[in-house]
Length: 365
Image (cartoon, rainbow, N blue to C red):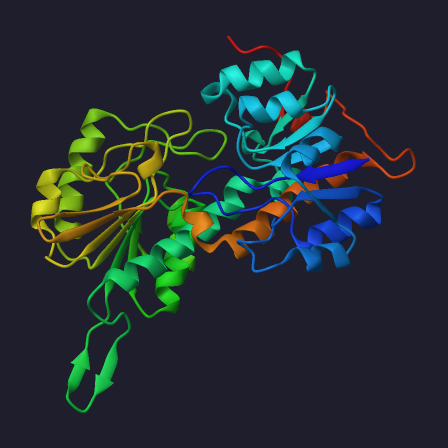
């Protein structure tokens, strides 16, 4: 069988779903691997290195035409779909309900689509979880970018001229990205506090050395899948009063709050911003889903009230080498779990919990 992968046709997408490590592993399993010419340009790898480990570097269209399995980060374009063979297996990150036209064309062409962002939150799927691996990268990068923009040192410094106090970080949302942001800020010497509507996150925040702050609340605002629920009007009012006081003390605020299937909750309003210190930084990791801050704009750095609001697109792709290494391992772990070495074929068990969640086989309305 032939596995193929191409570069994404997107200015902000520099990640790949194959790396040197996973290409070697796929070849050891018995696959042939085709990649687009200049595939490693964002990974600091030239074609000769790929060829030396057994990969075939060919033109883009031929990768799509020849491959039995195509690994692609984002939903393919209509032009790319035209090149696919019937019964191709397509694995990636496709957000089907946002890309209905392309998904339906793939289904009509009998392409078997596996969209890994739909993986269930079960133990067996953890090694395949592309959302978690990339959220880790995003949380780390958000802190690094924010520190670069901040016009002061992060750790406490004791000098002959006097003591420099540490920078204060506030993390909104203590999911995977938020927890990594806490850990990174602590490693840099910052004073870190965090909030989340899920009370279960308190122990995780504190285990990383952060201070957990939250509205007094006995409600369970966590779904059975471990995600945050949307909060009510009363909770929002209490949250606003709490955040107004906390944000006024911060140097860097990292926003990570998301609700699955909905726009990101608007948490930081104009009134809160007016209380913040001039020169402070807000980094909105939720910007592509609408943003947690009122003035966040996708792909832009905005300045309001002397505060920089960072809204970078596709944050994991800003460190594409590390992000690609994790993504490609996620994909390898999934594909190797459904590959039968003896018959050298992919076995799709539609009763399997993972397959049922990610296999898109019916026309979307």
